[in-house]
Image 1 (cartoon, helix red, strand yellow):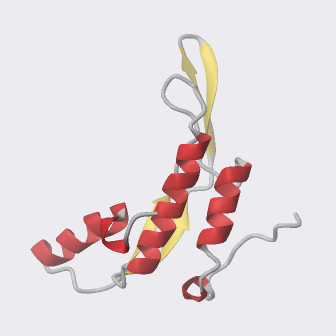
Image 2 (tube, rainbow, N blue to C red; image 1 turned 180 degrees about the vertical axis):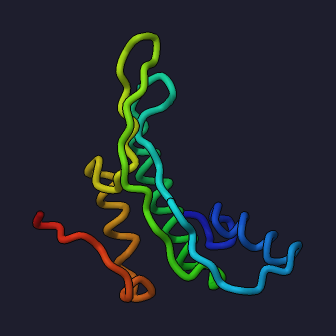
Length: 118
């Protein structure tokens, strides 16, 4: 992964803090990524990379004090074909591995993660 300063979260939160004087730490709410593009093609590897990048950015930016994951699925039609958008962090083995690896840091020790055995 790239250095912490280039993580998307840092690119967004640091200018907001600088330009608008946001001084209070805040959470990143409803974070998530789908694993299919607008045509229904798999982009699972990209979802895993986005997940790893997001978690590294949350960990690197002291203004972000936590995050919540948008853990949902939705179905829509693309050219008459049903396509599922799955934001769940465990929707794909690569995404789950990226999430599990990303939250291994002691910085995330105070949070909750579902039991992997269920």
